[in-house]
Image (cartoon, rainbow, N blue to C red; front, top):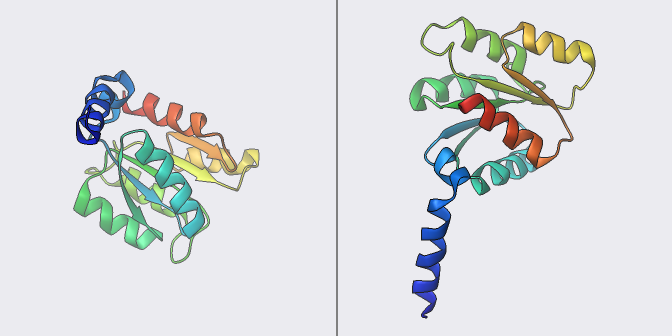
Length: 144
C-alpha cells in the first residue's frame, strides 16, 4: 500500500466515525485573549472535527459572530476591551444570535462566577483548568 493510499484509507475510516460525522463542518468561535490558551483549546476542538475561528477580545468576537455565524461559542471571561459577561449578554439579547450556544470557559471558578455567567445567558460554564473530555462532551451535548 502506498503512503497516499494509506492516508486516504485513514481519512475514509475517520469520516465513518460517529463523532467525526457529528462534528464535521460545525463552526466554533473561540474567544480567548491568551495565545497559549487559544492554541490549546483550538487544538482540542480541531482534533474533534470542528472548524475553529479565534477572536482575541469581546469587540472582535461580536464582529466575528456577525460575519461567520458560528454554531457555538467558547467564551473566556477576563479579556481586554469587553469582558465575557458583556459579550454573552449582547449575544443573548440579540434576536439574530440569541440561539447560539455559549460555553463560558474561564479561570474564574468560584460558584458566584458560574452563577453570574449563567445569569448572562451562558448555556454551560467550564472552569479552567479542565479535561478535554469535559469541554468536548459539553459542546457535543449543546450541538445536539
